Every structure is written in C-alpha cells, then in structure tokens.
Image 1 (cartoon, one colour):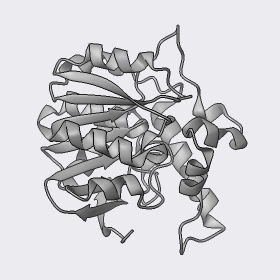
Image 2 (spheres, rainbow, N blue to C red; image 1 turned 30 degrees about the vertical axis):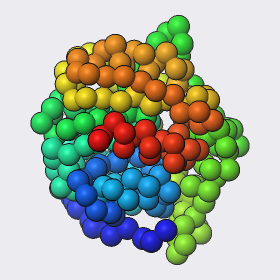
Image 3 (spheres, helix red, strand yellow; image 1 turned 120 degrees about the horizontal axis):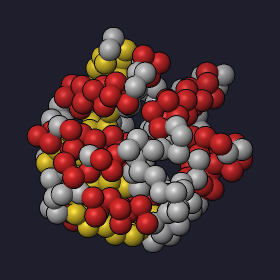
Image 4 (cartoon, rainbow, N blue to C red; image 1 turned 135 degrees about the vertical axis):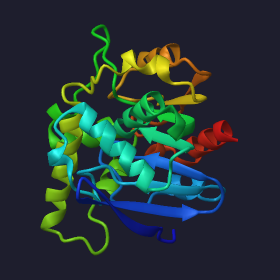
Length: 259
C-alpha cells in the first residue's frame, strides 16, 4: 500500500493528524478503539473510488489534546471542529466503535455535516439486559480476542509502525486507551439513544457476526431509534472491528450503501 497524504490541523491548540488518499467524492472515517496507528487495507479499498479522509481523534495515534476534553459536549464540539478542518463538512461519514458513536452524534446534533452515514458497532447505548463488555476492564492479553475475530489482526494494528520509538510507542497506545475511556467510560454509555431520532441521514449499521464487545441487539436499537432510513447488516467472520477482520466485505457493504 502507498502511504496517504498527511496534514496537521489544530483542535483546542493541539495537533491532530489528518490522513487522505484516493479519488472521488470525499468520505470521512472515524476509527474505532485503538485508532489508526497505520493506514489499513479497508481504507485502501475505499480509496479506489472515494477520497478517504481519516482524521485522528484527540488522544489517539497521531493526535493529542484529549486531556482538555472534560465533558461529552467537549468531545462532540472537538469532533465537529475536526471534521470541519479536515474538509469533511457535508460529506459521507463512516465511524466504527467509539468513532461510530461520534459519527452518530455529528449526524444528530449537526445534521448538515453528514450526507450518508455508516455506523460499525458504535458505542453510545446501554441495555441492562445485554450489557456491553467493558474493554477497559480487561487483562492486556484478552483484548485482541475481544476486538477481532482474528486476534492477529488487532496485534498487527497495535504493533509499532515503522519509524516509531520503541520506548514511546506503548505510552502512545496507553494514551489512546485513556482517551477512549475518558469519552466513553463506563460501558460506552453516552445516552445517545436520546439523540438518535435527530438523525435523518440514510444510515447503514454494520455489525461483526462475532462481536464480543457489543451484542447484536444494539444494532436493532440503533436502527429503531434513527428517524431517517436505516437498516443493519451482519459482517460474517468478523469481530467488533469488522474493518480489520474483513476489510473487503466491509468496504463492499459501505460502498454499496453510499452509491
């Protein structure tokens, strides 16, 4: 894979990396847990027909600034600013896991910023009858099997990219986990269900068949709560981060919805 173009934008005075690659209409991507330490095959597949723009959320690989985001509203405003500065206002938007929750918030609170929406196992809801698995309460050696059906896919994503400082890299990944926890602890519940009815953008909800973080019933709750046209589909042989386990199948589903 060729490397994407890198730009830096400032959010609250802190740098956030914005990667872009491809040709065609703009398509934003907000990554899930772990962020984007490296460009991945899923994004390369999307970039065959779209200009893929992937901004790094504050605190995730490629960005800082999560420590000044004290409330959920702080996060929502920061993500809105990030999308604007990345040139994504009014574009199609894909979000996964924690990034999926923020993508849904953008479509709900700032409806003009999102044309069509894809949510891949997004956080934000809570069901006492089917609670989510808390990713921040796990032993380190259990996380890979929770994130992906193929644990090696998560391990490959989390490994230090070429040129990374071997001492600093584990610290950076711990910071990414801290940033996610700061926004979504406990159990990813941001009471997003109160805002789902504000989403009018045509929405596809994708769920990994073997998601061990969020039960499939959450997909139905998202579709039932969204006001605009919405449907959900399953990605076979995939875990919570379906775009890592099944990049081709996931990209194909995304592009079909956006066509």
